[in-house]
Image (cartoon, rainbow, N blue to C red; front, side, top):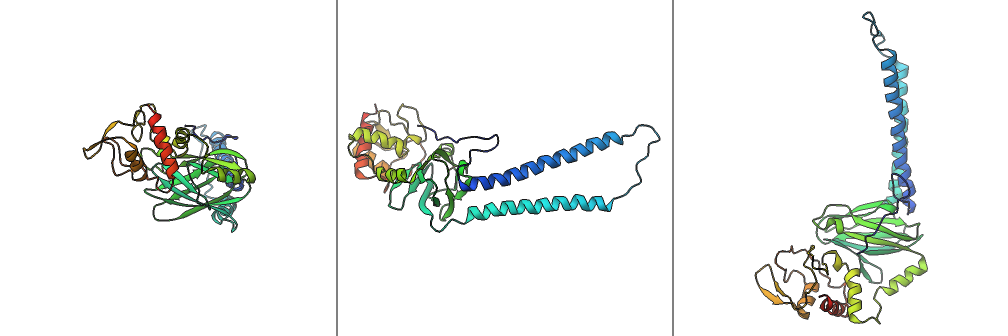
Length: 316
Ligand code: CUA
């Protein structure tokens, strides 16, 4: 599986790929350079004064000066003004990030252990791939099916908790066409670090085409469509095809395998078992694996389930 990647073009921060990024980075660098300048001023002055007024002879005395009002007012007022300025720099981008434009394109997001589902206005549901139009405000309306997750798109500088029983939102306006990474940034279990998605920023016309293509090419033979879905619907996040155990049991040689379940019962894997495991994964949980698979009810059409079954028969 291709891991989505983040474009880096400066030492500290990822590429700026949304209209928010510039504002967030301005706040970051304002605090950063303020810190550097004051570090140099204060440590520089300290080192200089320590050397200049060090005790050279037994007779050297400490200065009798107790305080200097003008100096103290100055070194209080200058930082105060800088802090108020930093507050407004932060507030400005916070307000910008908080209020989505009314004409935003809305996409619903569900987080669950360990995948992301994106549901478009026409009902198209896509797993672990978020395509968005370039240069148009997009609002994500997010919720979790199980535990706390957090959606983070570093290049867009957006990050927000995804919480069960609650909707949270973020919005962005993407400025660079191309791919970037979306990741879960709240530890949610053993598959947390694989809870990744690709963000595809597309020109408006390509975006319309992408939406149309999501129902899957209809001319593919079932095994090939199944193979495509195995990658696209993120089965590959938890099930290998090379025999190695991941979050879930491997698909290598699965068809016809005599599987033992956590309640001690056994069944030979057939079409019905696979279908049941896709739609109602907790019905029969393979012994030795956690019962964490999410249901794909509503996310896969019958044709797609048939295709997956056809593909699994070929994984030997
Ligand atoms: Cu979901 Cu970490």
